[in-house]
Length: 509
Ligand code: BES
Ligand code: MN
Ligand code: ZN
Figure 1 (spheres, rainbow, N blue to C red):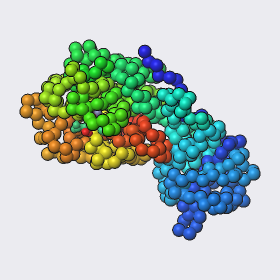
Figure 2: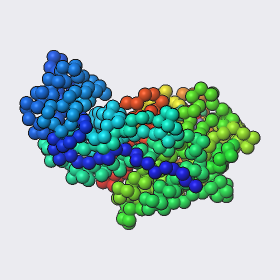
Figure 3: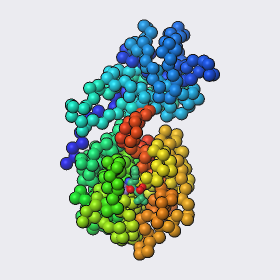
Figure 4: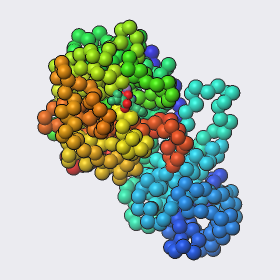
């Protein structure tokens, strides 16, 4: 049975009426002055404060040497007429950076992280971009302490509530209350994905993951179907069965479907890698860092959270999620290097390296997803260490059919997840030939490892389907310190990319 705890995933968010509203802390932004000598300038919406108060705040900020450097924070006492006792000023860099909503999102995240123990914040960051500020506060205040006892649980509660001032200048893009609702829904979905990733493999294994996905899906009104190990064998899911058979925790395939109700709606298929722990199998990984392979279901977590979010937002496209879940373990029942398996749909694969398991479970899921004849297919996975070699830990690699790949990468950059389009060099496909089967699961060299994984998956995508593959090996799990609105551990990437692509398809086809 599902034992996922109900918990508050972020602070209460509300719209503020005036900068004089009662609060513990007023959060403002700070951008660098127009030239090198001029002091940093506070970012406070037009007309919210009179000149005398503004001058007083600027003088206090200068007195404490406040910096506009991105992520820097300064705390000053507030002028008497303001409802808050103190002001937190968050550096946002150059004024031109305010054009990028992620500047606002990151500043809000930094503020949320530095305001632990605070009950009520009020902010002007939202006068630049209300939705981005709301998301940033919610995501920055995220915390995961389910597995701590009182011995190490933080004594200070996360920031409890934020009141956001709406912009007064240009007409707001949306009704502020609606924009806040939307931000709350999106940030909640990201937090749901983070919770899945942060839950350790002792507690999140295929059966449990599938149960939790069912619970979430049913409460969102989705159609839910779960294939267990017996059904997977009977129906020919050779990739999922092959990867999963080394573990006593048997594999699952979860299918969640949201139907918009419109008869002419576009169909979007999502597929996410759900390896609840990746030891490498018989091609076992080195011990150092293996604990990070708790994050190898980050793609699945994001896909489950996204289809639930699509239903909550009531998007005008049909969305299905096809989510293979398995634990990759070495044992006497595990698959061997040299084994040949038959993927769902009939393509045979020689398993040269059991640690290239993600593509095996994804191939089955992609073929299954394509059987429903989608217009678009997005798959996402913590697929290759080579993604991090090529792009670092914060930049997802986006591959696929040219136009849709570029569209997904562009949207990903616009919303601050920073996906980057990568090619399929044709010479690599010959390197996936097998001595005995249709395909080998790895090349016989290490060059372009992220790209050859994508080329392997391409073999399973039906003709005519617009496809994007997002490798989030680094971006799904932050092994460094927190930054912006990104905590240590699960990040929830690429939930926001996928929901934005879905909404873009709903708007433009
Ligand atoms: N789950 C890993 C990829 C990974 C590595 C994700 C590091 C996050 C951080 C994947 O299953 C894997 O082991 N890939 C191999 C492929 C290789 C055997 C061709 C890799 O990247 O080394
Ligand atoms: Mn692996
Ligand atoms: Zn893996």
